[in-house]
Image (cartoon, one colour):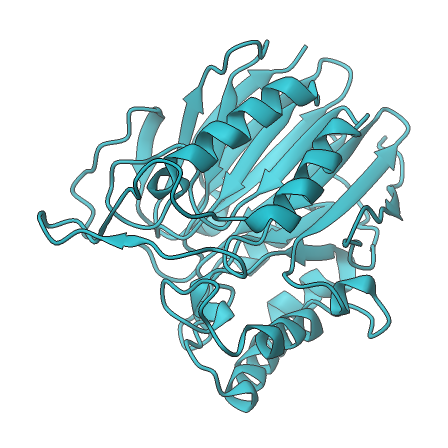
Length: 342
């Protein structure tokens, strides 16, 4: 039988974590279950909340585009967040599971937006309200919604590092020569995280002593040839992240991403890292890229899932293994992957 979850708040530099909740009746085959997803419209039916509840997650991680607002009108944004909070099945999740996460452009407020969005500080407060962050939390005072969340059970420990890829992100380069939307910036030009967040992330990984370290990015890190938003549009930032993961010696680093309306696994080997880096993309919850006919991804493992889905990670601390699953309606496992971090 699984041990009850004990979670603590970690504050490093400008960050703190969101209030913790303990889920009950854990999945017997896993020591800890993380469920996550992205791209959720409040004007479309979400058929997955009951399936998400059935995985009995210890934590639910919003991966971004948690609502589709695209507005600088905070009242309109608030109404949409409240609409999501009224969803009966989602309310059950909130009552039984800890909720953490980040935003992406559509809940941030500006399509493909970044540092230039003038209402970003006001939007941040509405996001934190949606996430039920206390008014006296340090997250209310910092710029950006990045946070660190630590979980300890008898068998092991996990850190979930939530990044903000919007608040500080500088301009992307539009592609006017091909049918792709954007293309990579010149090497060294621009930033996704900004220096304050980069310094914070470096401290998080360098000081981590947990068995696993999960990095949540609203946009894909590894897949870099599709011509939409991704870390690959800032290639020097990808290199910096990979170097940091390797040099930090943080254990069991995994990346979770969303945004794309498809779900897939990407994997690469980084120098001096004794396990492959996996970028698990899960998107979307209410609408998917049903017309998907293919796109290049040199890091892809398995096939692309282009129907509504969410993702789970099942942790085994004794064997140091993680089971990754892409799950659709009625709990159907659409694809899975297992990785050892021993």
